Length: 170
Image (cartoon, rainbow, N blue to C red; front, side, top):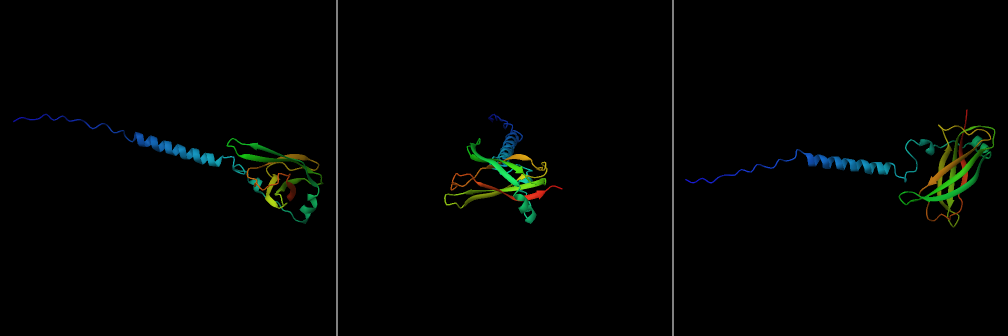
């Protein structure tokens, strides 16, 4: 009898999950990059840990009476484009404490109007807040507030900036 030779070809060695592990690591890295991009994107209104920006201070009778002694001067607007081609409007102004008490917290409200003198945007921001030092009597301090999304209905005029919250220092 004639026997045919059997040639046995060994199975090629399968990588021990090497391709799968690489794809998993690559997918995890992509997810981390996407999450970081959203977290650190310039579209965020305030950076992490900036809770004082959202602080709201009392504005009772005593605070309202004292607000007349707190002046906002040298208001200026500037516009710039950030690295992802978004236009950012920055309001810069000086806060002056012309009264007789130190202030631990000061909140201002910025109102942008439209062509019909109606409110296009109104935002309140703390410009003096702990842990920053108090605003002493007679002190002048500059502050900056950035706006990334001002409605297109804004009349491009200087907004109204007024004091809407105070906290007296001890």
